[in-house]
Image (cartoon, rainbow, N blue to C red; front, side, top):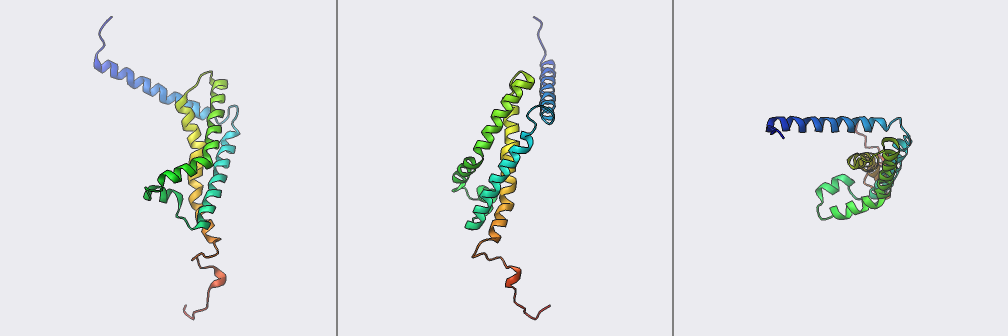
Length: 159
């Protein structure tokens, strides 16, 4: 067996990584028009609904925005992550199960990395995106909200 130089071995690894990346992108794009493509709409919508519910609940309780408090409040981080998983965990697991089914049906093999990326994008990302704005909306509906509402303005004579 001939010896393979380190340079040639590095080129081979680079080619393998390039092929893996191309397969990954091709498989992800194939999900848009393949079987079970409805989940690309339903799962983010379900995660967003849970995010809206959690955000409004936080806003009414006077808690700060979710991601903000998760990054800045290290002593509550574990509790916040547990609450998020409680809300969106089922959607994430459902996304994993559907993607495994899709891969086995459509591709005949399983790529766990792709499954986790798809589940993360379909379930976790929408949840975190909408929870902060929903928190701000929930604050508007607090009874003791410091937000000045248009009906509460007094004429000051200035302006």
